[in-house]
Image (tube, one colour):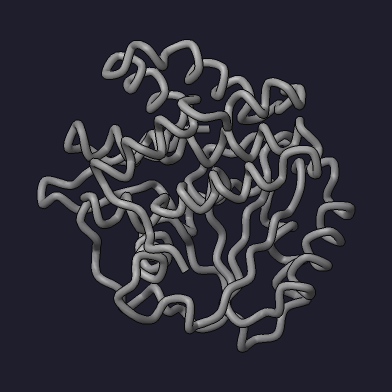
Amino acid sequence: MADPREGVTPEGLIVTGARRDRVPSAYEPVLAYVLGRVPPEVSVHVYGSVANGTAAEPTSDVDLLTIGLPAAEAAALGAEASAAFAGVCRGVEMAAVFSDDYLGDGDEAYGNRVFLRHYCAHLAGPDPGEALPGFPADARAARGFNGDIGRALRRWRGALGRDDAADLSRRIARKSLLAVAGLVSVHDGTWTTDRAAAAARWSEIEPSLAVDLERLETLCDRGGASAEETSGLLGAHGVIEQVTGRFAADIGLWPDT
């Protein structure tokens, strides 16, 4: 669900509704379960709808970010918690990163810092986000979040015929509409990560993409595209290539590695 508090301050900084005291009480047992199984030196944050108070039982995910927990351990704990609280949430998703992922001047590290500062609510362990300043709602932040859309397009094309088409189409739709949200943010001088609102607004700016953007919106949560349709989304001059090209021109892409 969209965060109604997301936007821009009068000073031009990103603002969101992510705060520890906005976590709905229904999810506190889930958080307690996870925190009781994580070493104290690991930093744990909650983000997404649970962090901004818009989550709804039992269809929302509990999205957690860990800093310092190996990815395999995070995945195993997420699966364990998902099974334990299947009646409370759709799943417990645990992202695993390390302190080095926040260091340096590169786009990815910058985007990580923006996300930690504005979209994550601290739960336990050290809090590296506490010392971070507010970040401007600008092209650099948009690039930090979704400047990897070019890399993603190549990765998705490589996955055609290998990954399940329905799952792949969902990943394509969710990431691509976040990139569209970045385009809208820069074009309109605002800040949003709301996929539905971004699709509607960009359809006004680029009417030729309206039908495709509406289709991407329906695929975000349900997936379900056939292999043929998924291939079409990723084809030359298709909607994903057009979004990627516009993002490259207006905002910029991460350099190839």
